[in-house]
Each structure stands twice: as C-alpha cells, then as structure tokens.
Amino acid sequence: MRVIIAGAGIGGLTTALSLHAAGITDVVVHESVQEIRPLGVGINILPHAVRELVELGLGDRLARIGVATGDLTFVNRYGQVIWSEPRGEAAGYNWPQYSIHRGRLQFMLLDAVRERLGPDSVITGSPVTGLDHDADLLVGADGIRSSVRAAMFPEEGEPLWSGEVLWRGTTYSKPFMTGRSMLMAGDDVQRVVVYPIAPPEPDGRVLINWAIQRRAAETVPRGDWNRRVEIGKFLHHVADWRFEQLDIPELINGAEAVYEYPMVDRDPLPYWSKERVTLLGDAAHPMYPTGSNGGTQSIIDARVLAYALATGRGVEWYEEQRRPTTAQIVASNRKDGPEVVLRMAHQKAPEGFDDIEDVMPLAELEEIATGYKKTAGFLPSVLNERASWSVPA
Image 1 (spheres, rainbow, N blue to C red):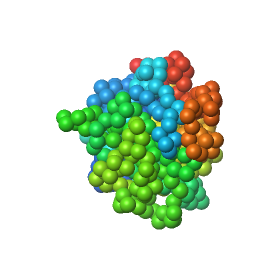
Image 2: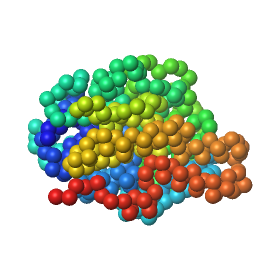
Image 3: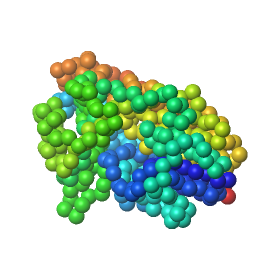
C-alpha cells in the first residue's frame, strides 16, 4: 500500500510513524515549505496522546525536551483559586502529560520519520494542491488552511473567526508554583494561560509559554494570522495581574517577541473521506486552543488511521471512530471547554470571593472538569484500560 501525506506537521509526521509501525512502509510526506523550521510556541500533549507517542517508541525523546505537567490551577483576576487538580501521572494516568515547544516536538517527530522511513521520506517545497495522486491513499494533514480540504469542499471559504485574539510569547524566567504547573487566570472578558515548556537551563531559568485571550478591538487582517506585535498593544489589559502564584506583567515584559493569532476554527464536516482521500488533524477538525486538545487529537487521529488501514477496516472505520468525537470537542471548545469556570466564577462573584464554595460547589467544578475529559477521551480509568492502537506484528 502506497500512502502520500500532505503536511509535515505534528499530525502528518505522527501518521507516517504510525503507518510504518503498523507495517505500511511505502509512505512519503510532502511539505509545502522549502525549509522546515522549529516555529511556534507552547503546546500541551495530554496523556491519551502521550500514550500513543510512547507506544511509538518516542517516550524517552519526549521526556528530554518537554515538561511533565504536574498540576493545573484556575484563578480569577485577583489570583483567588477557583479549581486545582493534579495532571498526568499524579492524576492516576499511566502516562504523563507534557508541555513542550511546538517546534521542538515537530523536529523530534521529523528526525524519527527520517530515521525509520529513510532520508527521502519527507519532501519539502512540494505542496499537494489537489486530489489527483498516484497512491492508494492521500492523507490531508496540511492544517487549518488545508489545500486537500479546499479541493474536497471548494465552497467552504475562510476559517471562522470568533472575534477574539491570542497574544502569545515565551519568556525565560524563574520557575513558578511547583515548576511543573499550568496556571489559567481570568474572567469573562479575558484570560491568561501560563506553563513551562522546557527543562531548566543551567542558570535555573525555564522557558515559559504564555498566552492572553481577549476580544479584539480591531479586525485582524485576513491572512495575517501570525503577525508580530509590540507588547504595549495589550500589556495594559493585565497591568495589575500580579498574583501570589505569578507576576503576569513581569513575565510578559521579559519576552523577546510576541505574536498575535486570531481565535479561529471551522464547522465540523459531513465527511472526511472521498474515494482515495481522507483528512486528519487540523485539516479535518480545527478547533479553538481550549483544553489543550489540538495537537493531541491529531496524534490520536494518526494512530487510529494506521490501525484502521493495517487491520483492513479502512478509512470509513477511521472516520467513524474519530469524526463524531472531534466534532463534540469543537463544540465544547466554542463554549470554553473546562475554562468555562473562569467565566462562571466571575459572573457569580465579579469582586472576588473568600471561599470558592460560597460561589460554586466543588462538585459542580469537578463535574465540569470530568465532563470535558470524558468528551475529549481522557478519563483516567477509560484511558488506562483501553486496548492499544498498536498493530500486532
């Protein structure tokens, strides 16, 4: 079986590795850019995706370049704790959760593909622009602006913008909280997420990813969706967000560069597969960066697709397994996913609180957290007991 993959991002590269591990070795990845560079900022890989990378033999490599997330805490704009929970192995998973630089993760996967499938398995400067191909299957893993998806659905148009933007950057700084913490702060107007994405430097500093989400005061130019901006454009929005856990303005002021991204996604599709073509990752189900599920779901797509092909179930079965689930996550993320607790706490106690249980019962907060894990497929008990997607030799 010959497979062509459009896109050498996280989803496309994991697909190549998964196919190879499943015994499908005639695989070529085509990437539109001439030179792949380690771009981007932070990304979280949740335990159900980490499991897949571990089963591909990449666990040690992942541990060397990422941070095993230990806990997640939500606070309001005054730094008062709304909800906190352990993450990864501390939460009972058999696998960790990792916070990592997107570019470093992509290069780790790229190196593994070239090692296992050969140096010519990834062809750069080679965009896939349509549905015509000379393979048994074309996998469109070419992102939110997928050319393969556009050829399948030519009337769809541009991605859908929520009207909100993300300002994102990375800063070398001293560790905060446990050193392996994720912190989400905010209300129903804006929010900040912060987490370390690399092991400590020799001087003890760590690379910390941060992002501010807020409704845009101006229209983001069409197509200019990763532009560099000055800190002064948005710093005043969080100028007084100095918490016991972390000084947000100080962190942002230490960034070397800041980029602006729109909050965009697309409506779920009626189908992903057509003749000898299927979609995967952001090409199939782009979603808001809520709940840390974008890259995670791409990795799971890759593993399920390889399993489906290697066991003779085909792309129809792959789509049956993945399309309804990802559509539910897209819908949940549009409603803020687990981060909805920030909005709810602000609406019920805009001036803050002494005890969160005076505002929201802990049982309600736990139900929100558990419900999202169930939707996204990473309840600890379910994940730990699920059969592997690896194909027996």
